[in-house]
Image 1 (cartoon, rainbow, N blue to C red):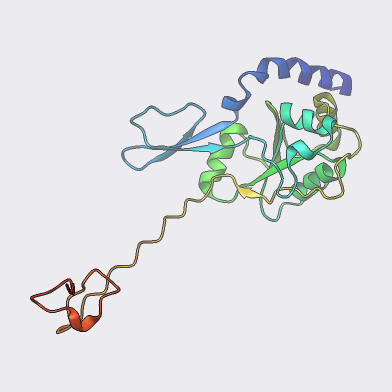
Image 2 (image 1 turned 45 degrees about the vertical axis):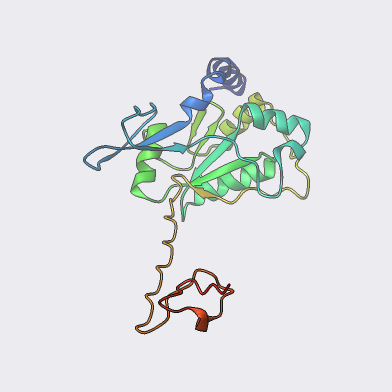
Length: 219
């Protein structure tokens, strides 16, 4: 497909996808009553436990706020946020990442490593191949510099980097955030046999606490 036609395709589809882009870029991790995990682009019902996984929402790079970027870049990144999906030991992923950094495209990166993340990726890209990227409502499977360049041009990203020298991309995050359970509170240590009962008042001297005066109060 020629570049001009490809750009027209993006502009035409972008209007149709603009209103529903957020919902199209969300994959829901649904845990059934039997413990079986499935993924869907439809929100679960109120009686179905689930974990919503964001898969295409633009995030501000660490140390660089989106509002601090040049106007042309900020407008493009707001309307058509870029998300790169990658994995370890992926040469094509490294090439795609370098291209985005060289071109000056702010992007968020999601890593796909676990079986659950692979299943979630297939909801967006049935082939499950990487690198994979979302540009607004567009899906870019595999990396082809000419194709990616045409889509970025049509989305309004500058042809040359206009990012400030202080710009730093956000660190890559797992596609499915890991949930860490809060640490349990330490249990109270039992009192040693023969010790005086606690008065509940740390300011009371221990020798004032007796069985007849457990609070240690002196009038």
